[in-house]
Image (cartoon, rainbow, N blue to C red):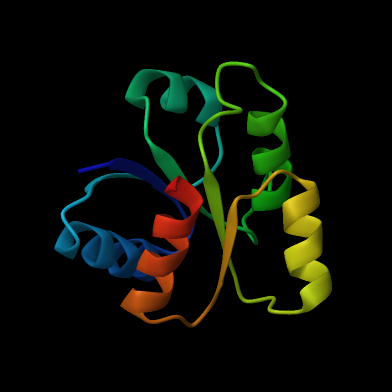
Length: 120
């Protein structure tokens, strides 16, 4: 069983992602934005982070890059969730250090497959 941090500014999306992950026996901790994300990640010590890209303040690409540039967190896989499904978006996400990519709207199996791939 893994502990997963979910970051999304949409409450509905958070609820949905949380539901999918909990149904697959993961422990889930959710945050509505990237404010003080490093402090929260340091405290929670998750096995994986699922993060929305388009958010107010620091977006998912920036937050992913910041986490991957931090020695404390660079080993934690990050799966980005985004409404942007272009190959260029996926490539940009990988450039920021993302370990996976799920395009909204997605089904439970899409998310769980991306999580599994990122953690293996």
